[in-house]
Amino acid sequence: MRTSLTARILAVNIIALALLAGSLFYIDSYRKELLSERFILATAEAQIAAEGLAGSRPQDVSEQLVRIGAGQDLRMRLYDAEEKMVADTFELGEPSFRFVDPEGETWLQDAARILDRGMDIILGTAPIPAYADPVDTDAEYWPEIAEAAASDATVIVQRRAPDGTPVINAATPIGDKGAVLMTTRNARDITQNVRDARQTLAIIVCTALIISVLLSLFLARTITQPLRTLVRAAVRVRSGRDRQVEVPRLPDRPDEIGMLARAISDMTAALRQRIDAVETFAADVSHELKNPLTSLRSAIETLPRVDDPELRAQLLDIARQDVRRVDRLVTEIAEASRIDAELSRTDFERVDIPRLLRAIVAERDSRGVNGSGGVILECTGVKLGVAGDASRLERVFHNLIDNAVSFSPTGAPIEIAITGNDETVEVAVSDHGPGIPATAREQVFERFHSVRPAGEEFGQHSGLGLAIARTIVEAHFGTLAASMRRDRELGARLVVSLPIWSDE
Image 1 (cartoon, rainbow, N blue to C red):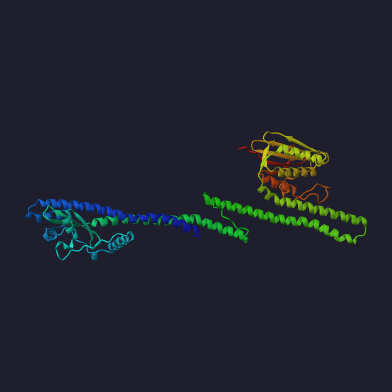
Image 2: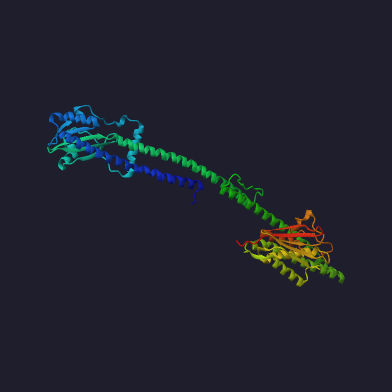
């Protein structure tokens, strides 16, 4: 498993071909079948010839032997009861076959014989004795003759010609006179058939091997090259040395690698956005904390040098306000920092939006924080449940109502309209304040962005309320947007849109 993907692809395909190449060894079974059939044929030929000779006149025996040997490409030798050779067709006439001299053959035949011997060694084939004509013509050199005479049955013996081809001797008794007929055939066609089959299979295996290697390399290149490109891009992103590293999206690859490339690219973009957001957030936090801390430091350093009681009271009041502002900022910053992590681990449940808002409005009424004009809640629709975290959604609506109360003039009510359809639930919080300019309707959701109404005491708001609200809504797969009022009157309208709860 430590090898490269390319090596593993090649190995898998080559192993399969190696199993196919193993079928070369089963050609030995094919050769054995051919020899078995030839032994049967040699037995039949010898027995038929012996029966013919048994009924022939002595003066016709030689002529009949020559005729059978020439017609069947056999060498036929006749031995009497004393195991003395009576007739040999190669001496009586023209030899019907000749052994091939390996010295006169091409190197291809030499290579074929080497391959034959190698296969025999691998397969553990029993060695076959070499064929050679003895100087003495008596039957002592041919054990099959004595065995045939003793057993009164045909005996088959295989030997090896000089060129490695099989030589088949068949010895069979003639009648009851003790004579034995031995036929000899050089079955060169068996060797050639085996070599042809082996060569054909070898060509097929080699061709398949070449094609498999090329296809494996193509497949490996198709898979590994884009993966290496993605790895290099990921390493550069990890090192952080190049903020503009482009992770290839491979738009021309509709397969899994293309999906992986686009997922990594999107993940990298999201990671960059998150890093940029963290860096911006850290800079904003530093800036927002620096102002009250500077003011607090100035008040504390000035306080010991001031003797006027009224001025000292003013400095102490400034210090208290700065401490409250720092405390508010730290609380809001901590809340904003842990929202994403907490929501990623939260199991959403069905939240009844009208019921939740009625509880929020009633609770705020009991605390007297709904403004001098109060809150008007309207609800239309049937399916008004969403999937979410009730406590987080409650925080969203509190922030939106707080924002509306802070901008509303005295006696002006806050209007909350709840509507729904088969896909979404909408909650619109409207006020009668100065409204939000079209150019600033996105900026109000940025962290620490705050445009407060005239006359409000400085430092009462952190500028994180709407940013936190949008973060929570987006974590619920919804949207939060700002717009003008529907009735065209002066004021702002903040709309939360959440997907409907599905019972499926």
